[in-house]
Image (cartoon, rainbow, N blue to C red; front, side):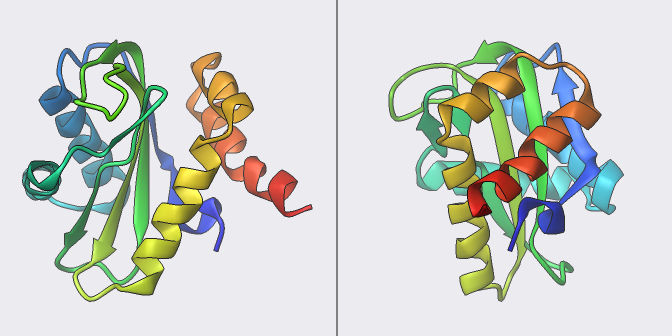
Length: 154
């Protein structure tokens, strides 16, 4: 599995005006709706339900919100880079400016976990996060995310 299989170029966005965790989740919902045809309000509701179980801010300015949704046939992702970090109740208490959301079918077991592990491994790389933070172009961000796989696999 590689990120180009779960992330469309249309599902990458730079957001300048998210002022809170909830606003960030709404931005993710809008990206998921425009890129995959998912219902934005249902996406936000599912992400908030998951956040109630425990925050998905994994540290170092990165959040990995995820949820299971009806009607999906495979795992899909949405990437949002914030121009201004927001408080996300992350494990290290640092604000978040990189969020990679995953949406899985309700019955996805191992596929969902593999995708989560892949995204987590990718965004644990300081060099990749530095490149993501240094770029505004969505196509460049998409390339950084998907090309990182090829470099790691080599």
